[in-house]
Length: 232
Image 1 (cartoon, rainbow, N blue to C red):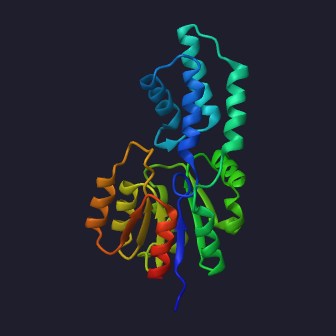
Image 2: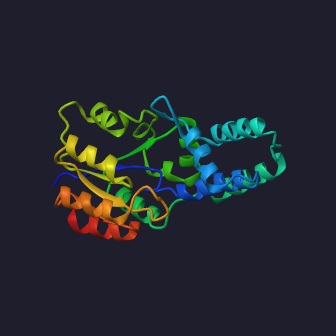
Image 3: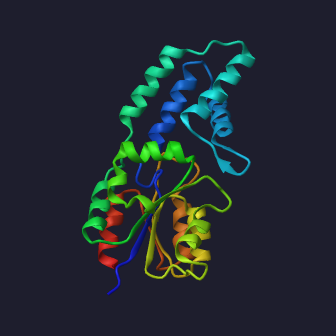
């Protein structure tokens, strides 16, 4: 029986991205910005011209520009203490290593597709240890929001790719819906990040109803791994 190909998203699927966001919030909050103001700053740093642009540097640039406009001082020492703490805290989500080890042990073909600035994403991948579970040419970064993973999959597997014997581990129900529509034989396992306010449980339930038998979701990777093992 042909081994399934497993496509992994990175942020909020394997990697604890919400904790990184919390550090960005902390950096802005020590400068007396309100939660609503911080959200505006984050969104300004996150994307531009249809591409994901968020990095520590992009966030600090937006923050410093706003501070200058308001006549406030950038708190260098405190900020870089927070950045150092953030870098030491970066890591995989619970259950991620067990899932990756299982796929590696079973010798499933594995790809890591990450949406974001390549240099910043590569740093997070390296620090988390994820790179050890993938061949170098199977770790792929793209910042293009519109094309995203759909175009990468077509480039990897050909324009006639339909998702057969391929499963996706992801966290975004809207992005996953587009991929399931584009590739009608693709299966998906979604981890719901409860700290991500963009999506609620109903979004995942609706996705599972829209694509019966093709979508499985949970708030934990361990539960998804258990289901995955039973289905392959």
